[in-house]
Image 1 (tube, rainbow, N blue to C red):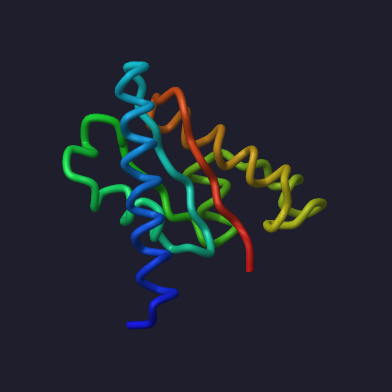
Image 2: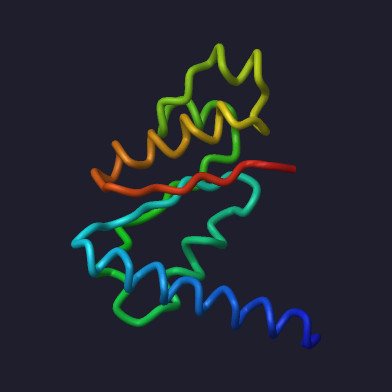
Length: 111
């Protein structure tokens, strides 16, 4: 394993712990909506002991159909803006907030 990979894993673990501390201090929970990362962010979050206290879950929505059906992303937005766009990411995050009934959600889409 390269030093760069180890540094990235350690940094991500530290950020996940900090996220958990912030959410617990506010009594809030979060969720994820992922496309190109295939659930990696959710995986890294759940590596933190006790994350179930502040992480509700995540949706992996790789296809257009999954984005529409699971997260409620508008078909028109996908067609006009493309899956890799701010507009789609925002609708994915909003969909995850509603799906999991949480205060905070992050969405990742890309190539």
